[in-house]
Image (cartoon, rainbow, N blue to C red):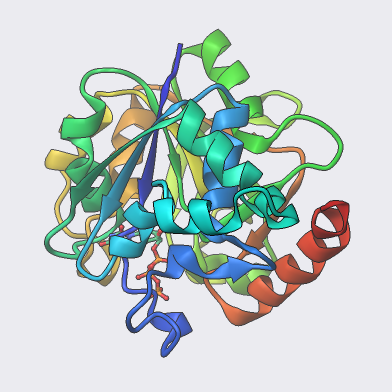
Length: 276
Ligand code: UTP
């Protein structure tokens, strides 16, 4: 059973400067909740209660968010404002939070490797909090992936079809469809030009990884952009037949950029906020 969920959150978030100059990108609010809180809620809904966060310099707000603020609690105790803290209190009560730092920003693969001391030798999930995933019609994306992993016991990446001119932003997979929407990955290319892309199926920010990924990352040198790419390490697992790609049910908003962030804000306002 998977219990741990790793959140690589050490990136600089340069696409959101100056907002991210002194504040982590993962703390950007979509309506009234920071991005990372949506991610932790999705993890908890999938039964993942051990939350591990890879942070970097200037990311202290993340730790403070998942902690009790006694002054604030005292201030609003007994008022109708307490309802605003119900969601975050549930996470603090039901999850454990541990942190480690990535001291140099050497890419997502390296960030995941930095989380190894928190994960150990077990399968784990990875959430990139700037990809906000929702499914208003059933289980969350991580829950869907955990169920698949329980059956297939291998690494799983979440994928979605992207427009042809967007392939350069993603890891792109190719593979054989073994059941509807589920592919055994035979090829992966990091950020290809459209003409070099084997398909338009792009990896988004949800993964389940088996622990041998750490050795594979160690054996992986810098790739595209000089960064240690998780896609390159996953390709090593894929050559052993151990990576599935899953077309998840639900929607994903790329909140690492302004357009996706605005779309997510409108969606969450419509679907979630009014229920408060
Ligand atoms: P992004 O590619 O979105 O990079 O990383 P970024 O630095 O956060 O944002 P931009 O492109 O400069 O605007 C994807 C995820 O991987 C994490 C980021 O925090 C983000 O969640 N990451 C990336 C790390 O933790 N460490 C790294 O060295 C790189």
